[in-house]
Structures are given as structure tokens and as C-alpha cells.
Image 1: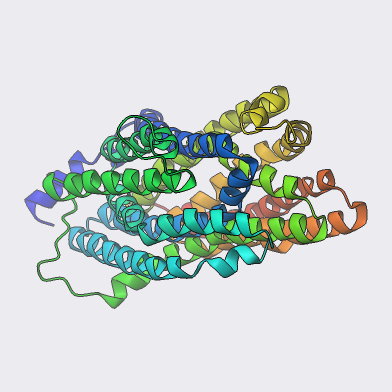
Image 2: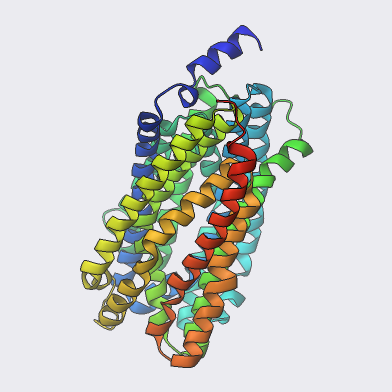
Length: 459
């Protein structure tokens, strides 16, 4: 290790700053940026709901494919984050540089694939409805989001590079800029305010992609123009199979894990639309996932910060700092989700009413929110365990937890409940059942991984 690398290692706060203060200072920017990100998803649906319930339903049907895009972007980013942070912890700066460059290359290729897919989304909407107006609204909205979605992929990649170095404040700046632009442009482009044309549902899509491209531009400038431990260069770039394999060792299970959420939403929509013949169930599902993100995004922000800290200290061989980070993250997660539980239990009518143009959603939505939110405290434990697996480079266990929660248990439980009771309300209990099964699996395997990989660390 040369003198420059020694200096970088001494400077890296992830190996030296007290864990509580480190987790707080790294989490706050991520929590703030993710809260704003969640808010713009809610604002997007809020203004679309002002157009018509059909427009809101179309956006709800489009949501799983939008989430699939985010799943590939965030999943690859998680792999980058974990790999780069572990390399920095092991003082392997050159490997960290290759991880950043190869990660951005992978995200560019993925974005190009979704661009092509954006021209062929009509059959997707026909899975759930035969209403030509609903199909037309959904296609017009989703096609713009996918064809012009490259900004999302590169922005998330650059943010993860910054996070892997502990520079979450810079990551927050890029994410905030894009989200705020989206929030401001939403009503202007939807309703034609000021110099902007009235674009309806397409205006919501354009606001989204413009915000993503602005966020991408700022994130690129922060990564390439700043003085960082990790240097990204494409001057002599060649894809490196070993590095790509390491990124996807954590990233691929994370992609699958998050994509499962899209498949779960598609499955729920199919149960509501085709088995229970309930458009209200579809709409409530879409609204719920937008609103619950306001609670879950801070939790993900704290866990993303914790993952970088745990991955770094795992690479550096520090058992005490790894353990302390895990415990403090779990406590933080439980507090956040308890607050979320109280909100969804106490004011569910006020929440759903924001999206209810004609009063047809409020009562059913309030009942749904009260039932679904019962799983929030269990989810806090599950997400923290899943995040710990990713920090250890054991992404397969995170993937299996998601499979249990959303595919192997939630969808079958929802289907059985729908077939037995023939009521929309019965389906919501599947969330609690699935979360309990997922946490049980995660706790069993975390105990084994902890014994094999954490308890043997030197200090």
C-alpha cells in the first residue's frame, strides 16, 4: 500500500468515526433524498388523480413496470455499492475503480434494453383490462417513462458510487435536484400552467423523465469532477468479467429481489381484476405502494447507509463496528416503522381521500391501509436482515427472503384468501402472513452467517 492509499484509508470515516454518529450523518442525507423521492411519486399520482379515476388506475397498472426499471437500476447499484465499499475496506483501490466503471457500463446497457421494451407495452395493459381508454392512457404514460428512462439508470449508478465512499450528502444533492424538478413540473405539464402545454397524463411522464435526466447530469458531474477515493474512467475501458461477476454476485439477487416486488404487484392486480373483478382493488394497491414509500424510503435510506458501513468494516475485519452498526440500524428501523404503523392506523381515510376524485375509494382504502400496515414492524426486522446479507456479499439470502415474502407466500396466500372469501378486504392479510414467513427464514440463515463470517473477525 502506497502513502496515498494509507492517507485515504486513515481519512475514510467508515473505519474511524463513532458508529452512532457515522450512521446518523450518513443516513440523514439518504433519508431526506429518499423522502423527497417518495413525495414526488405521491405528488405524481395526486395530480393524475385530479384528471380522472381512469387516469389514476392507468398509472397504477403501469407502476409494476416502472418498479421493474427501478429494480434493475437499484439492484445493480447495490452490487456496485457493496463491491466498491468492500474493496475500499480491503485497501484495494484499483479494484474499486474498476467496480465503478463496470457498474456504469452495465447500467447503460440495461437502460438501452428498457428503451427498446418501451415501444411494446400495449400487451402488458391488455393482461388486466379490456377498456380501450384505460389501455390508451397507460400506454401513453408508460412508453414515455421507459423510452426516456436512461437518466434513471445512470443517476442511480453515480449515487451508489458516492454512497460507497460514505459521501451520502453529495448523493442526496443529485437525488433531491431531480425529485424537486419533477414535483414542480408535474402540475405545470399535466394542466398546462404558465408557458407549458396541457399534456394530461403524458405531462406526468415527461415531468418524471426530465427530473431523472437533471438528476443524472448533476450526479455525473459530482462523480467525475470531484476528488474522490474512487476514480471512474472510460478512457481505456474494457468490460472486466471478474468485476462484473462480483457486482452481480450481490446485484443479481438484489435485482431479482426487487423485481419480485413488480411481479407481486402484477399478481395482485390480476387477482383483483380477473378473479374479484375489482378495479378498486387495483387502484388501492397502486395508491398504497406510493404512500407506503413515504414510510419505507427513510428505512431504505438508513439501511443503504448501514450497508456501506457494514461492508466496509467487514472488509476491514472489524467485528465490533459491524455488530454495532447492525444493532443501531435495527433499532432505527423499528422506530421508523412504528411511526408508519401509527400513521396508517390513525388517519387512513385522510390518506386515501387525497386520491379519491369521486368518493368511491375512501372506505375500502381505509380498511386496506389498517390491515396492511400491521406488518410494518416485522418488515423493519426483515429489511435490516436482508440488508446485512447484502453487506456480507450474500445476496442470495436477500433474494430468498423476497421470494418467500412476495412470491412463495404472499401471492398464494392472496389467491387462497380471494377464492375462499371473495372479498377484497381478505386479500390484504396476505401481507402480514408473508412478512412473518420471510423474517423467519432470514433469522435462521443470519444466525448461521453471523457465526461463520462475523464472529471470527479479529477485532
